[in-house]
Image 1 (cartoon, helix red, strand yellow):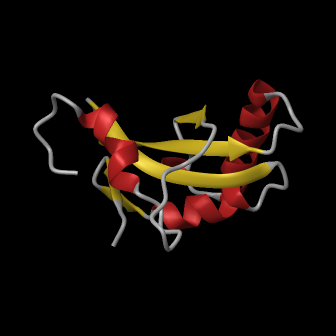
Image 2: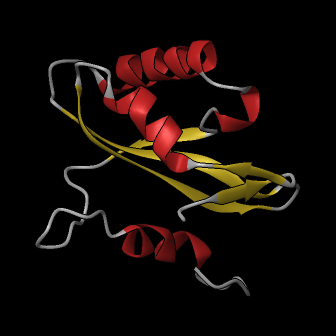
Length: 110
């Protein structure tokens, strides 16, 4: 099961992806856990936008949407925009590839 542990709380990315992915300006989304010294992991959203809105404006709107829809620990600490997200031939997100750069140098299995 895809899970982020932040401050001892289990956070399930699928719930957050459902909220962000439901926004009409979002084409694709992946939510991952990245290192956080205080909490162990923090929530980060990687978003592919349709280009109809300014990324800064869209990030603000997505954060508001998350705050209205999710418990505080589940709200992404950051949103990063990407051109695309890596997927397998069957369409499954390759989250390991997305997490690896953030965890380089950390003693943690991803």
